[in-house]
Image (cartoon, rainbow, N blue to C red):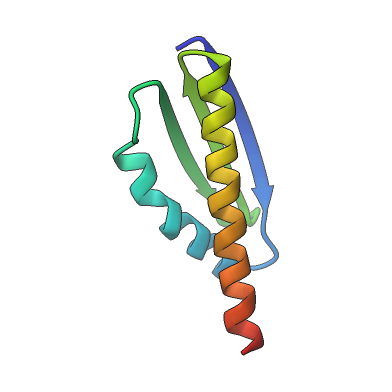
Length: 85
């Protein structure tokens, strides 16, 4: 792998952290493409989700990061709407 990135996201509650982790976990087990690999680490005490991206090139890195951040945003928006309703 030639391009890597690590992103740490802090969540306000363990509930949100766990929900996002569970929502994304299937994606890390069976990636859509062989050009990238993503590892997730849930750091409960710090309320942090660590995403480690390993890809063949910068285009694959950008695509993987954008996809995961999009899925995280959608999951958070869903949680927010359920809490409000």
